[in-house]
Structures are given as C-alpha cells and as structure tokens.
Figure 1 (cartoon, rainbow, N blue to C red):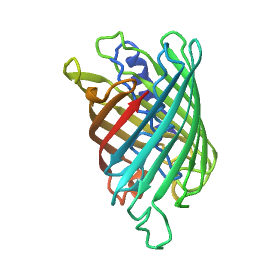
Figure 2 (figure 1 turned 45 degrees about the vertical axis):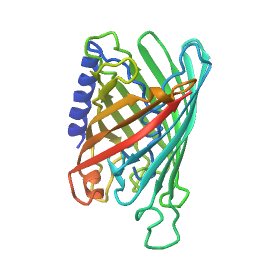
Figure 3 (figure 1 turned 60 degrees about the vertical axis):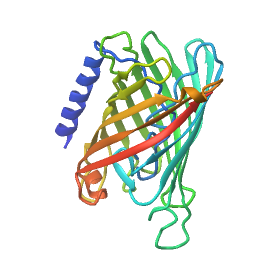
Figure 4 (figure 1 turned 30 degrees about the vertical axis):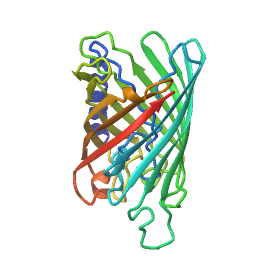
Length: 304
C-alpha cells in the first residue's frame, strides 16, 4: 500500500514539475464549491476557488449555477438520479498588493434518492451547503494559499465535515502550451468525506490547459481540458478492508463562450462538457462497483 501511494505521489509531482516549463492561456475559473461529507465532480469550493479580483477592482462578485448529470466529490459518489442543481456565490477582495481574500457559499439541490425522493419521505431537496473562506498570495508566478471549508447537509444526508487545505498554483500563461498546474493538500479537522473511519489527508494534483477553438471579437469559443487525480495520503479513501492510496483520475472537456449581449458592468458566460472518472477501491465500490463514471454538465456564471 505505502509503496503504491509513494509511486503515485512521485509520478504526480513529476507531472507538476513538468508543467512549470510548459504553459496555459488562463481561463476564467468558475467559482464553485463541490463538497460533501460523502463526495462531487461539479466544481466545489475546496477544489476550485473563485478567480482573483482584477487589480483595478477591490471587490469582485461571482455567481452562477451548474446542472450536472451526477454529483461526484473527489471520486466519491453522491447522486446520479433526478434533477441536480448547484448554485454558488463568491466574493473576492483585493486586500493588498498580491493578497486576495475569497469567501462564499456552494449548494447542491437533488430531486433523487439523496434529496426529496428519499424513501423515508421526510428528506428535503437541499442536499448540501458549503461555507468557505480562502486567502491567496501572489509570489512571482507562484500563488500559494490556504482554504477553510465546512461541508454541511441541510437535509441531514451526511454529517458535517470541516477541512483546512493548502493550495498552490503556478502561472505558466506565458508558455506556448499553458497548463495551469495546481496542487491541493487537504486535512480533515472534523468528520470524514468517505463516511468511514478516521479523519483523512487528501492530495490532489491537476492541470487545466485551455485552447481557443473559434476566435471571435464577442463570442470566442474555448475548450478547457482539465485533468486531475485524487490520492489518500492517510485515511481518506477508507473501507472496512483497506485505505486506498489512489482514489480517482478525472479527465474532462469543457466548452465555454461569453454571453456578450448580456454584458454591461457584469460579464456572463455559459459552459458545458463532460468528465470521465476512473475509480478505484472505495470510490469504485460507492459507484455500484463500476470503475468508470461519465458526468455531463451545463451551467453559467456571472462576474461583477
């Protein structure tokens, strides 16, 4: 087990190192918070913080909503039946030169078995409400930061999980092929995302290259190809038999286009695409024994 985790970690770090000599055209990341005491693949607060406010704007507001076909949190199955809607709001503050503070809420509403269609008949549709706050520093091309998230369930589908995470990203946008590498190291302070055993430590390594597909003055079409893998450094993907070191690998394709006809003081965009997740051990078992999960999504966001 330890040898497997060490090998995967070393491979991930090699990928991260390689990305620093490559590059990525920065795309506007949608502020979202995917989370749960159990798990999601749509964007979550902990895994995809909101974009930093532009230097000329002291405060930036980002709101939006995603409609995924399934909700997977770090490879952990949550829901894939009925309606799933995930609205979010984020406030970014340029606190000082090179220092950004973000705070926000992320939600997930379900009409399926984890929500209002629960067999008990007493559970509501408001499956998840996440609170988060982060601080990010600009140090040359590096952007280290800290993120606190509380994953709560208004309909009591899971117990609250509190988490603190270190996040570091590298700005390689000047490169010919920008990858936008990012790493997240998260520690559970209370509760556990897998719903089993001890508080865990999670590592995520990812890249998000963006490619222009159809240049246009008002409606440029872009394709993002995010890729990431989730690892348990300690007790994160547990079951009664084991603690899996490798949780999942996620490869996606997301198309986005601005809604220029709606732009004024605010900037609007719509996006849609699909993620394919390869699961292992605990994550596979929670997905009904299937080792592959496809998740489609459409959504929109507004930045003011």
